[in-house]
Length: 191
Image 1 (cartoon, one colour):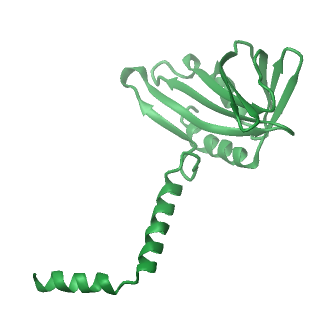
Image 2 (image 1 turned 45 degrees about the horizontal axis):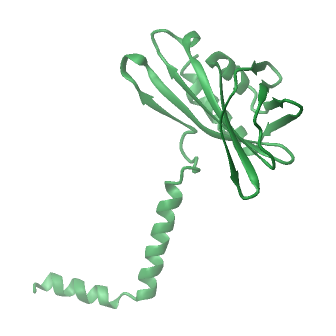
Image 3 (image 1 turned 90 degrees about the vertical axis):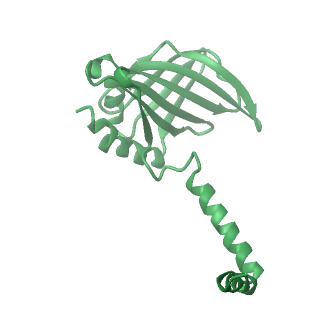
């Protein structure tokens, strides 16, 4: 055994096991909190290059709230820099978390102080039950121009109209910060 190896083994034996375990657990905790999918220390969107088709953008889920339910919404669109902004359709998927399932949505309306945008082609993806709440997942579309106008005001609302019920959701403080960041980063690309 070489001199360096013997000193290294001696040094490891002198480190207290509690310190080693604490250091290990702290490292593991920091690693998992930094790679969590709900961690938004970075950009609130990701982009993927698709060659001649352009760039695919995904806006990470934004949380909306009402008095007795939540809405989580994400946006996906492909942007072709040759064709420009008018050719980009935005697909948005949203989950309504409520004490009853939301099945038949007639329309969903985004509104702020500047614009009111309606989408009537909403499709049900699935309904799941999770801890006494139902998760109703839906999908619909709007244009990229409309999305940009909605996000110009960080205090927008989303109104969901079901057969005989209406649900209104407003932005949370965290969502407002994310939308502000999207306006400073992602949407600056399209000006």
